[in-house]
Image (cartoon, helix red, strand yellow):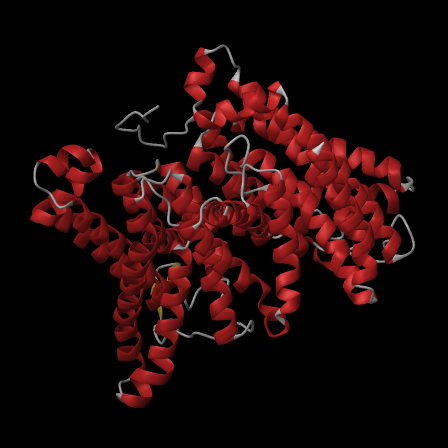
Length: 303
Length: 306
């Protein structure tokens, strides 16, 4: 029951947000917020629940954005069909990468996924006949006309994805993933096929990042490779870790805070990444469980 | 035929020169990994800081305040950049590696923390220096040495001499001094070395400082080559990782061979495929290595613990 009350309050907050922050500018920020929540959720599944340090999530975000846009602009598909293909595409590429990445652990996986993100970026820049390279693709229309509608669409999807993932991590599958994170060898001795489940989490995370990518080009109106620089992977990671990785609500809060904070600190607007870098370093050093851990510590002190 | 041979020889020379620069950067990464089993993700940003330090040493301090000639200023800047790198090494050890090691953190936390430091350094320098590339001219780059059909700049000769000297110095240090032997002992087995009375904390701190000093000095050598912006290191770090993995993490000889190899591959990629494809080629090689030979070109000495 407590869970349903929480869901109800959250949905009400999401519904009210564009009316509290009613200007077009702030509604735009809210759309970014919703996309970042989706990205943070996708990465958290891989880093937080399965313990795989994936530094290449920006690549799947890019694949979602480019596949959906090219299918729409060049081949005339409608948005939803293109989005479906883009999500599947990102998921399949994620599975393919995972197929060999699951053999790698720790640092090697981090570097391999980073290398994959760099290769993806270079392909976007160099495959000009398909992606227009650094010139970019222009005049991309969002799936719904108004910013308000787009916010409700992306936020609605984020809520649905959250609930589905929440159910997933509570299920036996979630326990399996956590067991692999804690000790893969022990999990294997209990008959858990670590490689398969790690690839599953990696592929699902990639598909969700691809889903977020479908909404980005229509919102901005243009698509250039620089939007998917490897720094994007680091900002997603900052959201997951500052919020509290390995919890469901932490990355959501991290995504919202790290999207809104630079906007509130107006003077830092152009130095958004400075805030991210500082937050990431401080949290890892002093509060590895993120804001969720800080909140629990506060509650323990006063309750 | 002789034209082709000359071309190949010329590109090999360019490749070795580039490779020496990469070795200067990658060696520090591998040194830290060998001793600490950790990655300093901000390592290449130390290179950028070194490059900016060298740039301002040459343009502001050496020629204006000290009245040195251009060449002397550049040589001096190698050492100020080295010092800047060493200071960053002391800081990153004190802020990240030492506290997290004492807290018994898992292997990924220091990596993530140094990613934060990297983002911080890049954007801090962006705030200080702006996004427009700096024109860092080495006075040695103007003088060309001809050798039959081959030619190269004095700068590339200087790069090769300085990096070979630095690497030779490091080898001599590790081979013949007590601290160097302690370093190797800690790299081999940290606990046993500790039981033998070796002060691990000191050795680890020293390793990080040496590695970072190499990165800083590498910055002074790379400054005139790269597009000098606050993000110069970002494009370098991925290549340095590729070199370190191709060479085998923690393996110094392997890293030197891999660095030269990547430099030569890069020179020939520019010649035959175009400069836009360098990263693609290098990373394709990295992924192939990870699939077929994750322990690097030269076989690993120790098994990874489960």
